Image 1 (cartoon, rainbow, N blue to C red):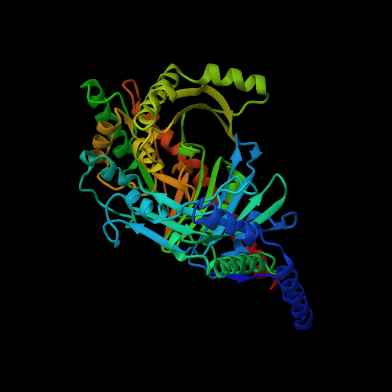
Image 2: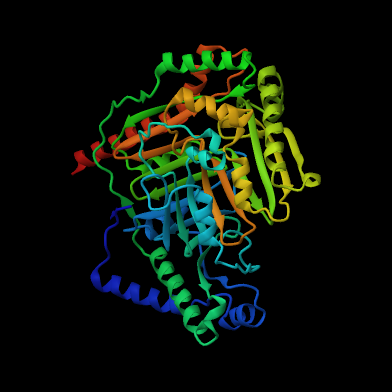
Length: 528
């Protein structure tokens, strides 16, 4: 990210005085836990080798977007993760980070090839994380994406020789040990780094390592408390760019017809083909994210600046979440528009959700149970809730949740492999559906239908979503993709329109953001 300063500077003397005051205040901020506590946990009790340290700041005058802009200035890699639960309630935490320790890329054109979970597990396994009660959430680890096409490494029989029009890494993760944790409940920001101290390091160097982590925290806090909030550079906007599909209406409807033949032949029960739109845009991707978070608040909202590409998303659906070795997977199927009252909305979902939608939902729940059961203790696998009405900003979904406890010898990486990709973006039986889809589409999907999220330093925790309602930006082009579940009685024209409707939210976000910045730039030009 390359932001420009938009605020006017104070007079030099006043600014210097303010900076000196801030520096003094930062030095007085107490870091937690103390060096004595860290020594106790790492050296004496030998609980692990990695522990977070933090300072706490008030957040009442800083928004997550402001925080991101302040700390990401000049950084090639950065991220902002936010969440709105059920479309109406802000989740407790947002996570903001930049300048990762390391960037892990995998893919045919990268140094690391093959299963991305192998490389990720290798990087994270050296951290024996010590949890502290002051921060009961993510404090660091790996944040990034896994492309849909990585299924070829988890299920080798799905591998096909496919075109690669986007040319992006198959996975990319930012290994982050310093970040901001924005607590919306208590309106504070914990500025976090980590003391990493291997067992063979002895005891003499721990004070130095601790002070290094505290210094990193204070540098990050200084950037956060800057009186200047930079803005990303927004080039002049040109209106009127049209999106171009990779298959078009005729091509997508042909997908539907061929898949129905496979269903009649007994090869599959359902499959989810997709189409991708490519649209030229002058918008800076972060300005698209700012607009999307207002238009479509979702459980998983994210902006990832991955250097050569940026990812903007507002996904409603968990792919694989692990908390204390308990695995969670969600299924969403059956969608209607919001109603005028809670009672009316409940009736709308029950009456408007077709028999096809409900049958599809049950099938996806069964698929989720199978995926979770592959890595969890069978007696612990259960459907926590079935076809629950869940409200989002503009629509209502029927949602279900499946969970289970990891079996001995299984890890979160095994859970991810088992569940990836979601049945909602592939089909059933999953492996056969993926094979047929690849043969139809003939192109790598990239991030669409893959996963975006985090793998914690804590080895029993992770949280990833399905990369739907997600845009990939590269070289001035926005890529948007959507699909729909095809069954025996699917109608070609209706299925094509379903993908267009699913894409409409992000298409609208792009168009509205372009119009906003076009008008803003015109007004600035008139007043100049």
